[in-house]
Amino acid sequence: MQNFGLDIWSNKNFIIENGEIKLNFKSMPSLLEITQNIRANDVKGPILLRFPHLIQKQIKTLYSYFDKAIKENNYQGSFNAVFPLKVNQFPSVIDAITEQGAKYNYGLEAGSKAELILAMSKTPKGANITVNGFKDKEMLTLAFIAAQSGHNITVTIEGLNELETIIAVASESSLKIPNIGIRVRLHSVGSGIWAKSGGMDAKFGLTSTEIIEAIKLLKSTKLLHRLSMIHFHIGSQIADIAPLKKALREAGNIYAELKKLGAEQLQNLNIGGGLAVEYDQHQASCSRNYSIDEFSSSVVFLLGEIMDAKNVQHPNIFTESGRFIVASHTVLITPVLELFTQDYQEHLLDFKDTNPPLITELIELNKLLNNANCIEYLHDALDHMESLFTLFDLGYIDLQDRSNAEILVHNIIKKALYLKSANPTNELEQLQSKLQERYLINASIFQSLPDYWGLGQHFPVMPIHHLNTTPLRAASLWDITCDSDGEIGFNPEKPLYLHDVNLDEEEYFLAFFNVGAYQETLGMNHNLFTHPNEYTINITDIDHQITNAIESKNILDILDSIGYESEVILNKLKSDLLKSSFITEQEKSDTLSKLETFLQQNGYLRTTN
Ligand SMILES: Cc1ncc(COP(=O)(O)O)c(C=O)c1O
Image (cartoon, rainbow, N blue to C red):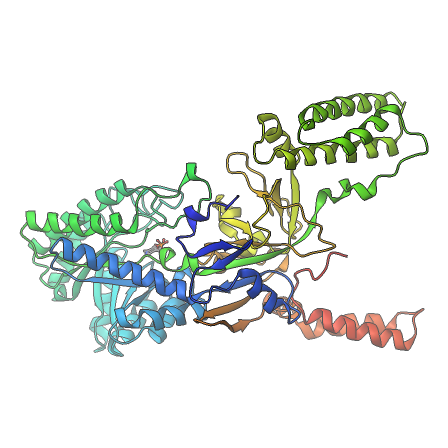
C-alpha cells in the first residue's frame, strides 16, 4: 500500500487508518472529518489547518534534547531559544508559541521594526528578545524602549555603524541600554538551498578586524559591559551537519578570544537557526543527514570542548530555529476540481453501426482483458493504435473512429495497470508515467507554496482519503492561477501517484504538509488570490474543536488592499447594470444581489461549472 512517504516526513504526527489520514494524537480525528466539518458551513477553496499540539511537541523536543545534551556533557551553560518571527508572524501561531513556550522562557526574534513591535508586545517578561538584520536609529531606539520597559533584549549589530548609532542613542538619552550582540562573519558556509547566510561574502556580520574595532569602541565608550552575545547563522534548513560543526569551532574560538580581550559580561553564544525539517517523501532524497539528537549533542559537545581547551567558562547557548518549530503544525487542504483526462471516459465512446475492423478488435480486447492475458492484449492494443493513427493520417478513418480508438486504448492501459498493480512491469511503469493525469487543485501555488515556485522546494503531498486503494495515476498538479508556473509537474525521480476518481460522484482532497514555515507571509497575491481561510484545531481526548477561524479576504477587500476604492468599483458595476437594457427590473435587482454576494466571497473557485 502506498503511504506517500509518511514514515519519512511525518515524524509520527499522522497515521493512515481505514483509508484516511488521521492525526496521531488523543482522539485522532481524520483530516477528512475536520475538512468536512469546516466545509459544511459553505466554505469552498483551500483551507489551512493549524495544529497547536504540534507546536507544543516541537518546543518540547527542542528543549528536552538540548537539556539532555547539557546533562550528558556536563555542560555548565544554559540553553535558551527564541522564535524568529519572520518564519510565521500570524496571530494564532504566535499565540500558540508564547502560550506553549512560557514554561521554557521561550522568546522571540525580530528582524524588522514591525517584528520588533510585535516581539515587544508578545514576549513574556523574562524571556529573551533578540534583534537581527539591518537597523536604523529609530529601530535601535525601539530596542532601548524595550529594555527600558523591562524586556530582556539583545540587539545584534550587523556592522560598526550600528554600534556607533547605539552609542549615540545611549549618549542622548537615559533610557536603559539593551544588551549588545555581535554577528560574526564566519568563514564557514552552510549547505542546501538557503545556505547564503555564511561565508566571507555573506550579507551580514562583522569581520575579525571589525570585531576588534567594535571592542575598542565599546571599551572607549565604557559600554563593553553591555556586550553579552556573539551570534552567527549559516543558513536555514542546514542539510549537512559538517558545515555547522565547522562554524561552531570558528564561532567558539572567536567567543573565547573576545573573553580574553576583556569582554567579561559576554556570556551567550547564539547559533542562529538552521535546524532542518524533513520535506522529502522519497527515501533516496532526504532533506538532512542528522537528527535533533545529533544536532544538540554536536553543539553542546563542541562548545564545551573549545571552551575547556581555552580555559573559558561555557557560554549559554541560544538558538533561533523557527522552521523546526512551526513547519509541521500547518496542513494545506486543497479540493481537486477536475481531472483533465476525464475525456477518456468509456461513456464518451460513440460507436457506429459498422466500425473499422481494428476498432472492433479493440472493443473485444477491452471486453476480454484479464489478469492472464493483459500484457499480450496491451501489446495488441498499442499495435492497433499505431495502425489506426496511420489510417487516420491517410484519410481512411474519421475523427470519431480516432476518438473511439484513443478512449479504448486508454482504458486498456488503465485496466492493465490495475490488474498488474501488485507487480508492475517496466513497460507498464513507463506507460503509467506517460499516461499522466492533471489534477486541478483549488489553490494558488504562488499564495500557498511560494517556496515551490521560487526555489523548487518540495512539500509532502497526499490525498487525505482513499488510502486503502493503490493510486495508479501519475499525477501533475495544476493550480487555478492563469500562470503556467502554477504547476507541480510529474517528476519521475520523485513520482506522485493519485487516485482515479469520478468527481461528479465524490469529492477528492489533497493535503500539503509541513507548510507552516515561511509560506504564509512569503505567499503572494498573484491573480489576486489571497491567504486561504484558516482554522486552529484543538484536539482533546474525546473530540476536536475548530477555533480561531480567519476568513480569506473577499474580492472587495483585496481590491481595497492594493489601493482601489471598493465602494467606487461597486457603484460603477451597479450603475452599468442598472443602465443596461433588455432585462426586466426584477431581473436587474436579482442580478444586483447576486453580484453583491459574489463580491463578498473570496476569489477561489466554488464550482468548476
Ligand atoms: C538570523 C536568523 N536567525 C534565525 C533564522 C531562522 O532559521 P530557520 O529557518 O532555521 O528557522 C534565520 C533565517 O534565515 C535567520 O536569518
